[in-house]
Amino acid sequence: MAVFSRRDLLRKAGIGTAAFTVAPCLVTSEMLADEPRVSSRSRYNISDADEIALGLRFEKELDKAQAIVSSPILDRYLNSLVQQLAAKSQRPNMPYKIKVVNSNEVNASSIPGGTLYVNRGLLEQVTSEDQLVATLAHEIGHVVGRHAINQLMLTFEAKALLKPVLDNLNKQNGVIEKIILHLGGAVAMLAMLHFNRQDEAQADLLGFYEMLRAGWDPHGFVKMFAMLEKVERAAGGRRIPFLSDHPPTPERLAAMRHELTLVTIPAGARTDSMSFHTAKTAAHLLPEPPKKVKAEAQQTPQ
Image 1 (cartoon, helix red, strand yellow):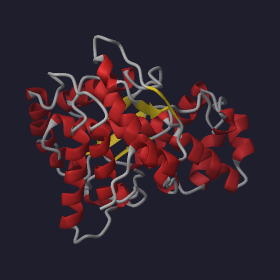
Image 2 (spheres, helix red, strand yellow):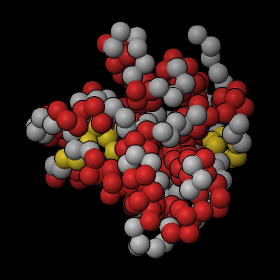
Image 3 (tube, helix red, strand yellow):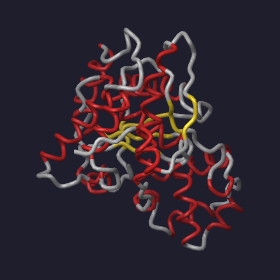
Image 4 (cartoon, rainbow, N blue to C red):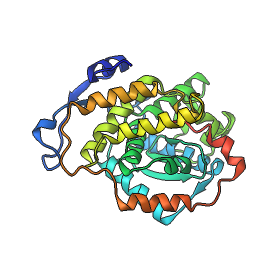
């Protein structure tokens, strides 16, 4: 198995580095390291406000197409994790939130503007809080890296729809919704957004440092990849849809293990909690997924 150093991974991904600094109350000076620094603007200079506006349109359409399920205990817990991670990200001012999709597929996703989705199937697979937090941190990393909004803009451009989208981003005239429908609907359209391996590698590293700054032990990434390998083995070695565009799991695992040698993890970094296990119980008590949604949930982008 090839072992990549951080600089090897960043070079492969085309990602620059910058000094990693955090509040002294969270880490020691020995923890200074590098992490990717993302651009302050998205492709075509889409502002944060415009990204949020477009994300809300997609969120509305996705919520119609997916079986969103609500549990007060689960919703409160998951949103607390997301808010803690987002506060330590490079884009802390986005309106992050998370929703649960009632599907047995092991999957999680994020869309422009900061909305995350996690399938109950993933919640039932994770066994510790740091494993779940690593998954959420990776998805927040996609938002921080502006991966979805950039891919959406490229898709609109390829379909000769970029100008009408940009012209109507802040107009409530139904044009954006018609464009989404024209392209097959939000689920189908977002399924077209294949993040490249550079994006996935960047999201891993961004999530790693979000997690570390927020007070969790980033060994959770190692646990997450071990869980994904287990899911892949159960599928007979076939890449599951959730991982179709990611680098091979063993490579991601090796990269994170190497990253762990370059930082000092504070004593008391979180790994698990009673709240996690309470939320796990709440996930098991959710109603059975509707059969008609299962096939759609497989198309959810990673």
